[in-house]
Image (cartoon, rainbow, N blue to C red; front, side, top):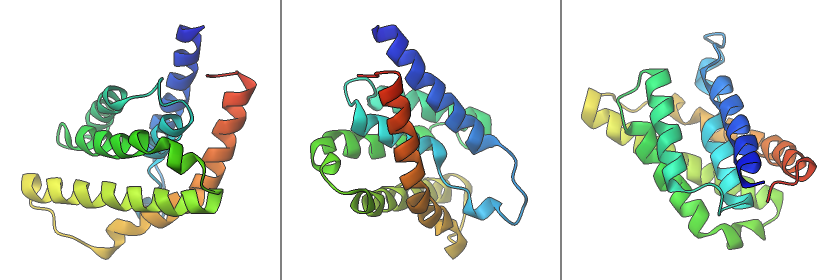
Length: 159
């Protein structure tokens, strides 16, 4: 049973990786939500004993390799965000969905600011306000991600 549940979680993370790497029209690219991080945050809230910081680190390395970003940037930022969500999962679970989406927006803001900071030191990237658009779209998409993954978790009885 444990390996079956882990496989089902891995399948959802794989689909999030596909969504994150799927090409979009250039006008929509700045608004792309952070699918992988939001799916990781959902699983760390729903079943924190199944998804941990090590999983976030490995998925971040896969994202770094697939997207061509400097190795370790996504790993570190995913790990920090998952550490915060996993250590506070009991509090966050009790919030309503709109309160959770505001918290997710704060975590996504932390993610983007850490990613900017690391990219600034590694590659000399400068801050632009459009860099924060995925926070807003991620906050809006959290409702659907939460509801779809909860239905997925209940259907397959992932515990």
